[in-house]
Length: 335
Image (cartoon, rainbow, N blue to C red; front, top):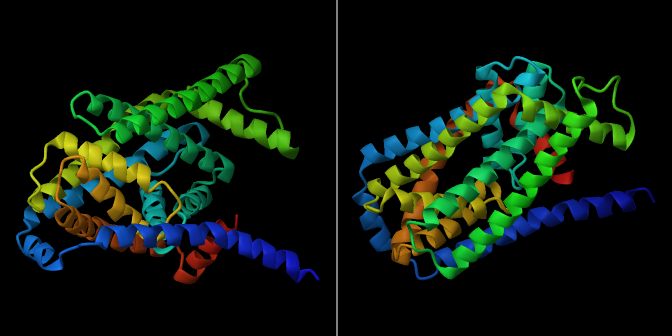
């Protein structure tokens, strides 16, 4: 009798995974429809590999910047070694390449929590702060770019909706920090271990308060600006390597479309969704579909291979094996 609920729970845990694979397959079918492979191979033969290496370097550097930002966000809870945060970030990226639904965020939090002896809840909270900061920067970037680039109406509506969501979330976070500042005063740490749901919620909020009011938070926010800059430079270099001589702002728009698109549940390594949203972003600048599709596949492979190698090395250095990583991925899927 006890196996029935477990079976039902297992079926429910498969639903997001199946949705991710279904989305990836749908995206690939659309992207590869009317794709002229001979023309794409001719374009690939003319790739400038100097620009490719430059793009790879900038993209790899962007995640080193992310590791530095993470270290700064966690400063209120203890001294985090930069090499450990870099290792955790790249191990998490490798997990995202291998498993669906992006379990790498949980994995990197677990690794850093263990190595630096910081509570897992606090590390996960810092990842949430990272995502909020990234959302604010993405929204602001989209607003600035829309002043200089004529976007289709559907993109303008998406930017408007994203702006409202970001403003609401930011207001909630600021109000929570102000509430805790008034309630807790000069003693932000709750006494004793948190008990019950209310205690755990209060512990999470005090962690958010500690991050948001620490002097290192402002340095982390400034550091956050370097991460998308490096990613845009990486994508822009890839465009030039492929013969797409688009302006820098075009790379900003395409990267924003890709990043917003791949945030949805999807297959391992964002296969399918990356290509779809890359082609969608390039369509704003009237890039022919075969050229856009060929570039999306080429850029995906060129930017993914370094992370596969670096991430695998980081995983081994962290003492993990593929078996343990698979177990963690299954746990994250079922959570």
